[in-house]
Amino acid sequence: MPSLAEEICIGNLGSLQTLPDSFTWKLTAADSVLPPSSAVSFGAVEESIPVIDLSDSDVTTLIGNACKTWGAFQIANHGISQKLLDDIESLSKTLFDMPSERKLEAASSDKGVSGYGEPRISPFFEKKMWSEGFTIADASYRNHFISLWPHDHTKYCGIMEEYVDEMEKLASKLLSCILGSLGVTVEDIEWAHKLEKSGSKVGRGAIRLNHYPVCPEPERAMGLAAHTDSTILTILHQSNTGGLQVFREESGWVTVEPVPGVLVVNMGDLFHILSNGKIPSVVHRAKVNHTRSRISIAYLWGGPAGEVQIAPISKLIGPAEPSLYRSITWKEYLQIKYEVFDKALDAIRVVNPTN
Ligand SMILES: C=C1C[C@]23C[C@@]1(O)CC[C@H]2[C@@]12CCC[C@@](C)(C(=O)O1)[C@H]2[C@@H]3C(=O)O
Ligand SMILES: O=C(O)CCC(=O)C(=O)O
Ligand SMILES: [Fe+2]
Image 1: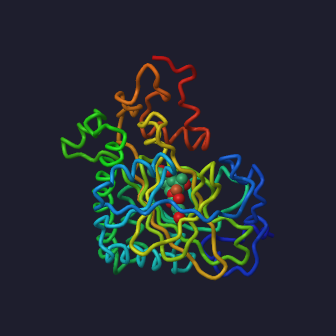
Image 2 (image 1 turned 120 degrees about the vertical axis):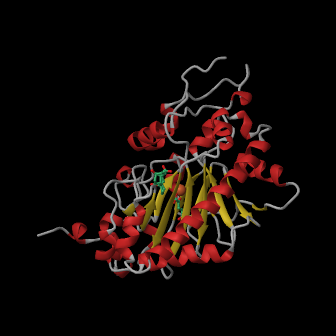
């Protein structure tokens, strides 16, 4: 006879009346692998990451300060239409409202590549997360969309393409701004400049549609466990239910309340490397809700394809600030991340940095 844990499927968590033991987090060090001080509390403080208007004349300074303080910020006046945000949210709702069996037909064959399933970080945690998701990491998502929406796949693929295109443009704009706050430009990253000039993509984008169903005991459950994104940066659209929390040593867990039309930007590990440690990659997680389900859509702007080596920007290195990280390709970084998870940056850190 199968155990209770085996019968629970992420596709219909929302119908459960009690929290199964396999989903009950005790918040010990084992449940929250990073950072150690984040393991002790489920609560969050009354503080917030700044909302920055991208048309503000002081935008570079504002973004620079937010990046250094939080490794995250929110953006208004970003140029993404409300219609597109509504479309991608309703695409996600339609997908997650489907019966579990239909969703499982679109399951990813391997963790982290396109398809339906648990987040890629789940094997690093003892307990299961109260969420389901769909990752779009390559063109194979189209086949999944055909199986999910035999009649409407063209429409949904169109929305996804438009969303990716718009996010790509926004991510490049944000990159220029963040680099500007450090006193450098894209031209100071040789590979990024070359790719940009040749009209190629600077970073490889992936999308993760996240769904957090209503939960009978939200205080003891976890939607998405504490992690940093491996990316250069991530742009997140959250539906009107809160749940995202960012961690800051000085403040603890801080909830990022949703503001209609405002997007959240999280700085990832790759930018931490590029900035030679000047900008932290923000530790964040998603909590769940007793009465309301929640959707979020993350655009994960990763590193370049192929053998391109990513290393701290040379202009940010000097006798007083030696290079803290060895160079690495995006593919290699992801391999390390999914072997050692929260120790990935340590694994590529130069032991005795000198210049
Ligand atoms: C490009 C990627 C980043 C990601 C791993 C992946 O290969 C595809 C899924 C991405 C995602 C989305 C949800 C959070 C996250 C930590 C995860 O579990 O899968 C990120 C990964 C990441 O940033 O490392
Ligand atoms: O749902 C959220 O608010 C967080 C999602 C997230 O961190 C991710 O997809 O990487
Ligand atoms: Fe994330």
